[in-house]
Image (cartoon, rainbow, N blue to C red; front, side):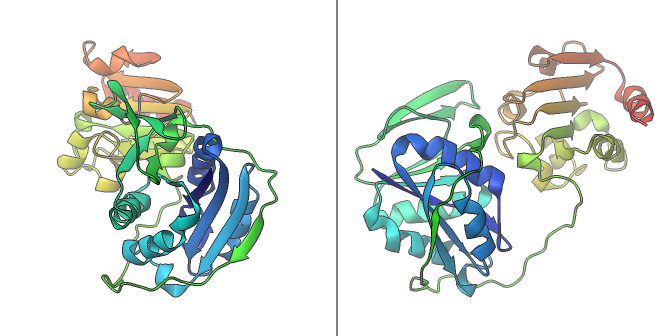
Amino acid sequence: MAVLLLAEVNGGELSVDATAKTVSAAKALGDITVLCAGAACGGAADAAAKIDGVAKVLCADDASYGNGLAEPVAALVVSLAGDYEHIVAPATTHAKNVLPRVAALLDVMVMSDVSGVVDGATFERPIYAGNAIQTVTSVDAKKVLTVRTSTFDAAGEGGSASVDKIGAADNPGLSEWIEDKVAPSDRPELTSAGIVVSGGRGVGSEENFALIEQLADKLGAAVGASRAAVDSGYAPNDWQVGQTGKVVAPDLYVAVGISGAIQHLAGMKDSKIIVAINKDEEAPIFQVADFGLVADLFSAVPELIEKLG
């Protein structure tokens, strides 16, 4: 069996963490060919070739793939699909936009957020906010799936795959790039950070959310937020952690002023160590926390920032 893995490429650079974790998931499915599609993506292809477990890398260096438009990338994947039984990608925003289009063009189902590989046709995925695991068997000739990377360890380096340059597929011309608006940040990317500090409704206001950011900066962490905090306007949408936000599994997750609704827990309960700060000792977050502090966050967090120096 052969696997075509769509790498996560942003601005010509490979997202090594997401791609390497997807390689780990796909190893059991067969020989892996990684597809890097983007403008000036040669460096990304070279980085992908070094991931252990990658047999070959295809580099589609073309301007039409440079701005993350789903339609031309989907057309490229479909043009290559004939040689592969499995088409795989990390469950990122970009891949979730591309792979359903690929599945529709191939007239097969798409299996999203795969968290376990049973065999070449059978996969596990979380449902009901992560409270149950569904086992799905596909009888399609080609299996199209996105991988929940938080449940897999990243494949190491040491690979020496060949890199082949390929031409662009016909662009269907269904969409056009206008502009990107990206907020600059020196903090780690939320889904791959080793430490995440998140704030919830208990923070109280957008101004008070600066406390969460200060604590995150002291720890060299990414900043997250519950849906309640985002809906209240305390934090931007791209900080949201949870069932309808981003799924994270850092080494350390600090939840401040978060009650622990099931939708939020679905996005962070795989974190290795969970620390909760909440003045409500009955808050559900304490049921999953490894360390809990029952305290007013407006007293505890400034003191913690001070002690961190």
